[in-house]
Length: 223
Length: 223
DNA sequence: TCAAAAATATGAGATATCTCATATTATTCT
DNA sequence: AGAATAATATGAGATATCTCATATTTTTGA
Image 1 (cartoon, rainbow over the protein chains, first blue to last red):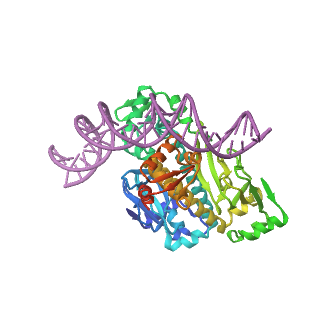
Image 2 (image 1 turned 180 degrees about the vertical axis):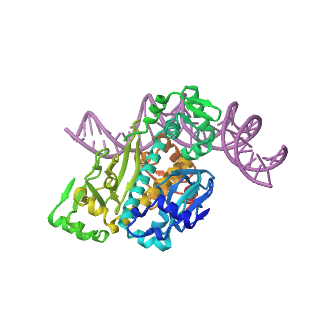
Image 3 (image 1 turned 45 degrees about the vertical axis):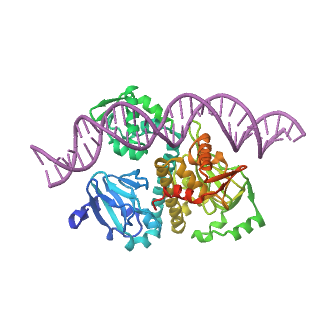
C-alpha cells in the first residue's frame, strides 16, 4: 500500500473531488491510498480505521467459512464505499477486501471524522442509497441462487462480464462468486459449448448464440 | 386493513412514540395501520406510498420468480422499517410483504414527508444502520446458503425459532425461507429424528439433543 | 356441516452439484 | 532458466436436492 503525498495527492483530490458528497470540509482529513493488484485493502476479521471511497480500480469482498469454503460476496467498483459497516456498527465481523487491479481510494479516518460523518445528512443520504442498493442486490442474488440452477446464473454472469462477445473471467473467481465447485462450473461451460452457445478459443470463450444465453438469464428477472 | 382514528390512534402514538427517531414533527403526518394475519401490507410489484415502521406483530418479505418458485427473503419484526427502498430509489421492483400475525405499523406518507425525511440526519442515521444490518444479514445468508447443505442451515433455524425446546414452524414457510423443496426439508427432518436430535410429537418436534444441533449450526458462524 | 383447499406425509427415480484423484498447462519467483 | 505454484482440465463415483405422483390429515369457507 502506498499513500500519496503532496502534489500527487492534490492532483487526485482535484481530479476526483468528492467535496459535493459532504457538507463539511472532509477533504482536510482525506488520505489517498493506492493498492496493488491482489493486495488486501481490508483483512478479514480485522477492523479498519478508515472509511474508503474507491476512485480507480476494482476489488472483491471475500469471506472464509469454517469448512474452508470461500465466498466472493461481491465486487467493488469505482464510487463504492468500503468499510462503512465499521463506521456504523460497533460490532461487526469484517470481511476481507482484495484489490483486483491497481486500486486508488480516498481514505477517511473514522476516529477523526466519524462523528461528523454520522451527523451529515448529505453524506448519510448517499450512504443510505448505496446500502439500500447493496441490500437489494444481496437479497436478489440470494433468492436467485436458491431458485435457479447454475445454468441460468452463469448465463447472466457471462452476459454481464463479456467484452465484445468474448467471455474471459477466471474460473476460480467465478466459482467463488457463484458458489459452485470448479468441477461443476467447467461442466456447465462444456454444456454451453456443446449446445453451441459458446465456442472455446484457447482460454477464452466466444459467445456464439447470445439469444440462448439471454433466454436463460431472463429467467432470473422479475423486475 | 384498518386505519386507527381518534382516541385509538392517539393511544398507539403515545404508547410507541417514535418522535425521538426524527428531528421534525413527524407525528403530525403519521397514520396507524392495522393488518390482519395473511393480509398483504405491500403487494409485490406495486409501489407503496408509505414508509412503514412496525410496532406490533411480524411479517414476511416475499418475491416470486418466473419459474414459479417463491422465496421468503426475510422476516419482518417490530422496529423494522418497510418500504424504505421506495423512499430512496426511484426505480425499484417492490417485494411483497405479508403479515404473519396481526400487525400494527406507523405509516408515514412519502409524498408529504419524503423530502423532510431525506434531509433529517437523525432519521437517516438510524435508517443507515438498519440497512447496513440488513445488507450484512443478506450477504451472510447468501454465502452460507452456497457454502453449506441444508443440514447446517436447518439446525441453525430450528435453534433460532424453537420455543422451550419445541420446534413448530410450518414446513411450507421454512422451505420458502431456506430455499429447498418440501420433500427435501422433510427428508432432513427425518434424518434428525433418526439420529435422535429431534423427536416428533404430532405436528411438532421436540429437541432432544441440542448440542448436536449447536454443532451443526456452529459451522455457519465465523463471527 | 360438508366440500374444497391447504398442509402434511411418503416413495421412487432424476438431476444438479460435490469430492477426490490426477494431468496438463500457465505463471511466478529466485 | 528452472523450480515452485497457481490455474486449467477431465474422469468417476458419491450425495444433496429436485420433481412428480399420490395419500392422508387439517383447516377453511360457504
